[in-house]
Amino acid sequence: MRATRTRRCLRGGRRVPIAHDGDDSMTGPSGDFTTGKRTAGHTAGHGVAGRMPRSGGVLNVPVPRAELPVSERVELRLSAELDSLPIVRSVAANVAAMLDHDLDAISDLTLAVNEVCSTLIGLAAPKATLACVFAREGGSLCFEAHTAAKGGDLPDTGSFAWRVLATLTDRAACWSRRGEDGSPVVGISVRRERTAGVG
Image (tube, rainbow, N blue to C red; front, side, top):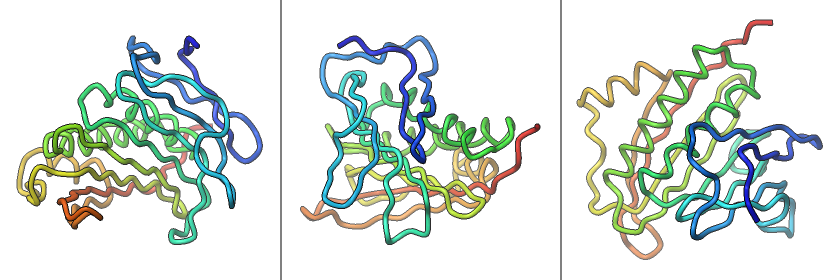
C-alpha cells in the first residue's frame, strides 16, 4: 500500500493529522507503522496502517500508562539511524501543536528532539532501535528517548550541543542503565512548559 504524506491518528475519539515534513517518502523497503489507541488486553498494531522509511517502527496515539501522570502519550520505535530523524521531527511538531504550544515553542521543541535523537544515534550500537516517548504532564510536554549503546558513556553535558539543548528546553537530563540482556542503554529526557498559541 502506498502511504500518503499525511497520516491520521486517533486522539480522544476523533482523528487528528500527523503530517510528514520534507520531501522524504513515507514508504520504504521494510517495516510498517500503525496508529491507534491501546486498551487493556490489546497490543500495538490496531488502527490505520502505513509504511515507514527503511527500518520501520510503531506509532501509537494515545497510550495511557499508569506509571506516568499523563493523559496522552505518543511512542515511536525506529532504527537508530539518521534517516529516522525526519519522522521524529514531524511527530514532535504535531504533538506540540496539538497541545497548543506557540510557534516559537514548537520550533524549539522540534530542534530539541532532533538534537536528542541525533546525539543518541551517535552513541547507538549497530542495528539498535531508538525508542521515543512524547508525554503530556500537566502543562508540560516531556520527551524521552533511549537506545542500546556501544558503550556506557553518557552524552557530554559540557559540550556546546548540550548547552544548546538546555537552552531550548526547561529541563534536560541523561541517564544510563543495563538492558535486559545486560547491554548498556543510554537515554536523554527533556521537558518544555507550555506557552499558549496565538488565537
